Image 1 (cartoon, rainbow, N blue to C red):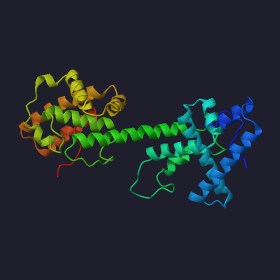
Image 2 (image 1 turned 180 degrees about the vertical axis):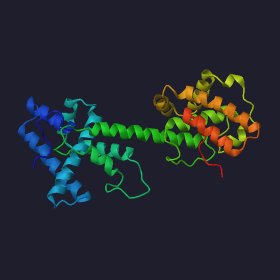
Image 3 (image 1 turned 120 degrees about the horizontal axis):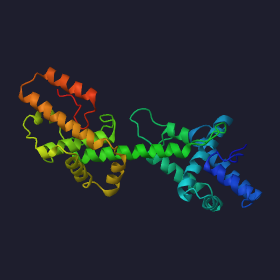
Length: 298
């Protein structure tokens, strides 16, 4: 059974390392056989735990999974240095350490679902399928899939942290907001308008009593408000959020603030709820109202 070596440089990192080491003579046939033997044993254990080791197609699937997971761990441990990766493979623990590292990385970024449990326990099934290394694919994109999952993990963590620290209701529901920018923008707008209060679902009603200062209507002021919030977070989280923000974040906030002033004028003129809703809908279609609350007031 061919578990590891491919005759190209487009396969998983484990295959690349072994192929190159075999080509330049730094890996002997005996050493390669030892690595293959360990890979087979690891695949048997993986199949026994998650599949059925007595069915050939499932044993082969386990082998592809192991190659992908080991490749992921090798990249992280070696920083994509093939010589360092080869040294890790030749160490007494062989494939075990890279496999454990790769599995831990996948478990960390896997989204926990409240629905059907994953076949692989703490690791998401879809993510593992992207990391796995079936031989019919020309190029292994497991590392890219992991990076995307890691970015999403950081985004959700940042959203959860913002909710916990700056919202009156701290329960985080990832489906309430579709982007990190929306969460941060609601915090910036609410705190700017209320003098630093924690976010509550009362901005529309509260806006009627707020005196809007003229110096609020500038990008400089909104940048300062945004930075004041980020400075209250751990530096790593704050930096991750800064990198996620687009160039239109502050301009969109400023447009929303101008909308708030017009909305307030309608409120003070005792406009009907229907007229206020129509006004909000019109401006929301023209440009996104970033930070303006979208919850239902019952």
